[in-house]
Length: 154
Image (tube, rainbow, N blue to C red; front, side, top):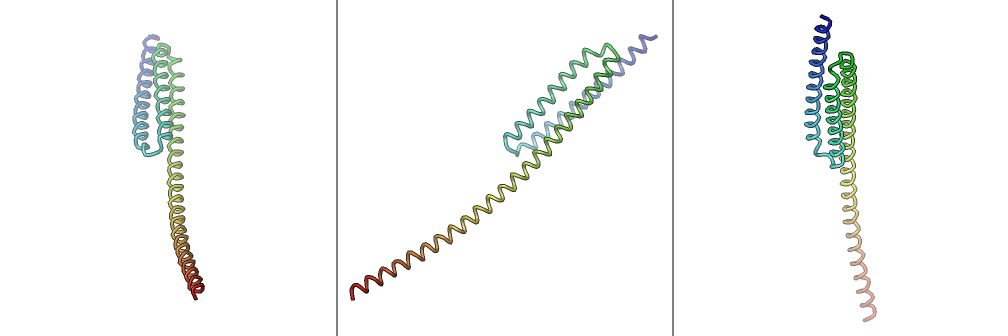
């Protein structure tokens, strides 16, 4: 009867572990989808995000393997499950922080691009003013030379 109870508890733990793994796999799929949406960011940011997702997947696979080997003992399985949940929560928080950082960096980049555009427009306007003044100076120099030439002819 004790073995029967232990078997039921172990099966319950296995069922809970499977649920957690399924949830984690779904979280990974959601993370991958978010990574695809973030593809408009720079390649370095996207690469860092993919690396984080891969590390997360590797951690989940490693934890899955550990769970499969430790399910025989009820106490070990419960402890492993708790650790697995903590790891998943930490990874989820890490991914969330990475998403926030990427969004912030994208906004900063957009701001920098807008500032560069404003600077280019300002420089273009300044160049146009410079060229206009330069043309006026050349015309004034031509007129001055013509006046000097006409003075010499007189």
